[in-house]
Amino acid sequence: MLKPLLIILFLVTLLAIGLNIDFSDSEPQPTPTASPTVEVKEETPQESVVAQPIQTSIDENKTNDNNDTLLAKEIDALFKKGTKYFQNNEDDEAQKIYNLILKKIGKRDSYKFIKYFTTAYFQKAFIYNIYPNNEKDLAFDAYEMIIKRFEKSNDPKLLLFYIDAKIEQSYLVSSDEIIEIYDQLIKKFQTSTDPMIQKKIEDILLQKSFALMGKNDEEAMEILDQIIENHQKMGAKSLPENIQNSIFNNIELAIITNNDDDKYRELAEKYMPNSPDREPLLDMLSIIKNSPDMNQDEELDEWYKKHGDYRFPNWSFDELRRWAYRMEDDERKKQVIKYLDSFENYKYNVYDKGQDSNKVEVQVEVHPKSNNSVNYQNPYENDEESY
Image (cartoon, rainbow, N blue to C red; front, side):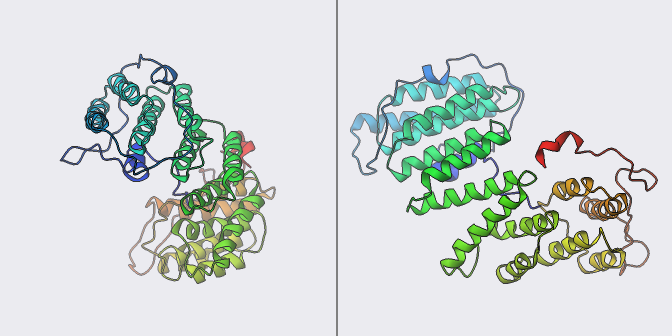
């Protein structure tokens, strides 16, 4: 399947895109990376800031007095300092800076200071969660500070902070709890008329669909069907890229669940006429679909001739492999795995073009090597709950 594009955003991306706060120096700052750091010894998030009142709405035009203007400049400088500490692997010092920022913010409730508040806690949670800290409980609590402050708000801008914190928090819990969090958010905001919140909920639905793959494939397909139907009802002539990509996931799920995939192929033809992924993936999925019952060697050879430059960007074969390993008939299983191996080997450039530049001789092997016997261990046998 195509890996979703909504996976966890690094905090730097959250700052640059989601919060629109610029703490950079005049020269571009490198993206922080996780590196060995000293143990963090500091106050917990609950102790690091004066208790905040519940924020229900904001006034972006609210006038700050001169003291607030000076404080904002000071906080900007502190954020830059915290970023440098982080980049120098001094996580404990960075955390102290963010705690100081939170104390300085106090009960100020202009939108600028609300963004400072939210950004500081996102930064703290990010640092808690990365290696070698791995303090997931503290990261969870940091997100909780944002959630508790804005959960009863009626202002869409503040509710976006709430939604982002809930989503980031969801990556710290089990897969079953993730789906529960998605359901809570969908229920809470399904009637919202705010365009930004509607977009967030659509993204959450896509994430839920992805999370359900291998657990409840039928429901995963139904979610995407509903999203596409909603766009069609609005007369959309095109679909967002993440929804276009998910069409391929539903074709895959249709194969796995033995459902008709024609309508999804038609959607791909309609909404993705110029996509470089369309023909290679549709042809590949056709080969895999037919492989349990029919030899596909000629079709595979034709695929290599036709799509010789394609490398399956962002595509994972895991769900198709799980489906193959669940097959009870050894011959059918062997056939599917043979072609999956061929495509996956090709993805990682394990192939031989041979003497004739117009013909690709594919090196097909059963995975793992076992003299073409299917009596090998299922690599997903300890992952039964995922399917």
